[in-house]
Length: 107
Image (cartoon, rainbow, N blue to C red; front, side):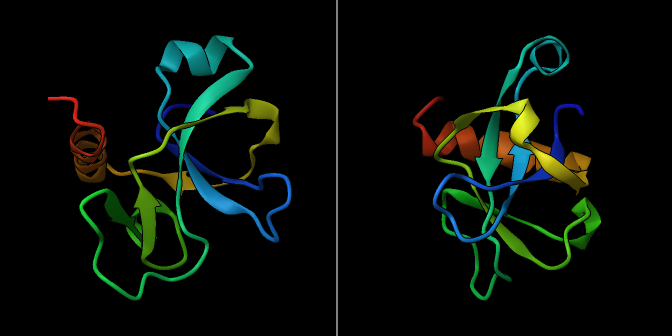
């Protein structure tokens, strides 16, 4: 498990797991039980991304184009992440970082 990996995560009360991108520093991922993730939609993206979203797709290991929401970080237990689905490619990593910064007003 490492930063930028995509796993499935199912929050309590949700009917199905969602793709979750690990965005914590590699030291946290290696040494702590909790990590920060971004959640992605579980359904195929049928619209362009909003300013707070990035589309991930087959190049990142997902089955189809998927909206990843960059305006909300979740802190979760690593043990609840299941089924590694892929890893965010280098270009999309840059897009996600820029979108997180913009969506949160961090300039």
